[in-house]
Every structure is written in structure tokens, then in C-alpha cells.
Image 1 (cartoon, rainbow, N blue to C red):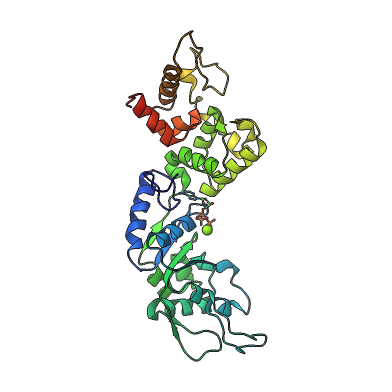
Image 2 (image 1 turned 60 degrees about the vertical axis):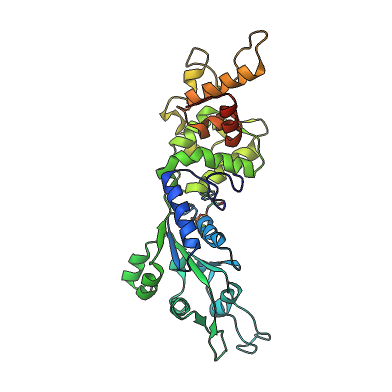
Length: 331
Ligand SMILES: Nc1ncnc2c1ncn2[C@@H]1O[C@H](COP(=O)(O)OP(=O)(O)OP(=O)(O)O)[C@@H](O)[C@H]1O
Ligand SMILES: [Mg+2]
């Protein structure tokens, strides 16, 4: 989706009520400096949202910190930096990630994996806005926005003692839960469109491919959808993305509903797929008429869903909207 287009928000694609609400919150949160906790299953877009919150008042850098990777003796130095000679091998002073994020956003991804001793230091950072590099006697002040994300239940971690309760309360002041893709399936066509565009792929989906994708539950959420598209595009040189190109888990979901466009296929349900074809052209018919008819058929086939119709037609939504206006088609 182009920057500035309706619904565009720092790369966050979707028009479902849940995504619209999240977009509204992102704009609000952009104006504050409060810590934010992002919850949601893997692949639901937590990092996309974190970057969007940062971009909403874009100051300084966005520094992702993968808490799962913070292991070993150098963790504290990685986060908070060290002074020259702080430990054997520290021949130069070094800035840590927190200092890099000064004036911007530190994104603690998979915060549930942050080692307990670092949790204490993060709490201090949140409360006092200061930290101490390894080997230094002095605290340093920073101005940092903290965004944390987890797919785990932090409350349970806090109850079990693997996550500090005080840090949990501090982080949980503003929390935002990202919906699973299966709970906002209406966004699937737009996401497909988005990923095809990003790959600069000009493929179209056959209707049974789209059906299968709409019927599937997407346990890996948007990331799984993105991977499926990439896989299909990689396997295909022709213009159509066929159901056979889908991973097998998805392929089995194609038959659950009748093909999307069978209703418009010239007089029968048995027409071959892909079904969106230009109708036979009587002599002297204007191209515009054919185009208008094809658009109308796509709209009928998708029960008026413009995003899906655009996908079936193999054109962008913006182009479809322009043509709807041009041909004065209301639906
Ligand atoms: N609403 C969305 N619009 C556009 N792209 C999205 C959206 N949600 C997710 N993505 C894409 O899906 C992929 C996974 O998103 P992201 O990394 O933000 O998920 P996550 O919740 O952080 O997952 P994990 O917990 O596995 O790290 C990314 O490539 C991201 O660009
Ligand atoms: Mg992530």
C-alpha cells in the first residue's frame, strides 16, 4: 500500500476492525512516552506495530533487542555498554544497545526471555531513566521509549517467579494484543496483495487458491501467509498461482467452500479454473464495456468484496476504485 493511501499506517496492512483499532492506538501512543507491552501469537505483527509506534513520533533510532539471544557473560555489557578496562578484553569503552537507543525506542522482543538480573536493571531504567555501564561508578541518564513484546503469558511467568512481578506491572500499563490472522480473515486478500506487490510479482491467484487461503487457520499468522506467497511466487513462472503450489497443509482446505467465482462462470459451475476470463466478445464491443462487465462479474463473485475482486482481476485496489468511479459502479 502506498504511503498516504487510506488505511496505510507505517506498513501495517489491514482494514479489519481490530487492525483499524490498533492503528488508532498507534497514533495515540505515538504522542506519549509510556512503555508499551505488545502481546500476541507468533507472526501476528508485533514488530511491525512496535516500529509503527516508534515511527508515529519518529525520534532517534529504533533498536530491536532480541532477549532470547541475550545469554552469556557479556549480556550486561551488550545492553549497557562498558568502560575501558571494565573486564579482561575490554580494551576500549563501548556503548551498549540502550545508549544507542537514547532519544529513540528500545524494542525488547520476547521480553519473557530476559535474564532475571537484567530485568532488575530494565526496571530501574523504566523508573529512573538511568543505567550504569559495566565498570562505571556513575549512572547515566537516557531518554528512551521502551516497547516490549512477548508471545508468552507474562502474568503466569510472574506468578511462577520466572519474570519479575514489579517489571510486569510496570510494563503492563499499556498493553496491546494483536489478533490472530484467523480472527481477521477479511484482511487476507489485502495482505496477499501487499506481499505480491513487495515481491514485485504480477501473479494472480486462481479462485481455488484464494479459497484455500481464506479457509485455512494460519497458525503461523501473517508470517506464514507471507512465506506461502513467497513460496508460490518462487515456484511459478506463469501468471497464475495454482492450488498445487500451496503447502500441503493449506491445499486440503480448498474444497470446504464452492469456488468463489463459479457463479459467474458462463452458465455453469463446471467451468475450468482460473475462472476470471474475458467474456466472448461480440463484434464491435468497446473495450471499456468488456472491462466494466468483467469488474461487475468479479464483484458479484466476491459478494461485493472489493479487495477480493481486485485480487481476482489482478489489479491493485486503487486501480479498481478508480475504475468503479469511472464506470459509475456502486455496490
Ligand atoms: N498487519 C501487517 N501488515 C503487513 N505486514 C505484516 C503485518 N503483520 C505482520 N506482517 C509481516 O509478517 C511478518 C511477521 O511479523 P512480525 O515479525 O512483526 O511478527 P511478530 O508478532 O513479531 O512475530 P514473532 O513473535 O514470531 O516474532 C513480517 O514479515 C511482517 O512484515
Ligand atoms: Mg517478532
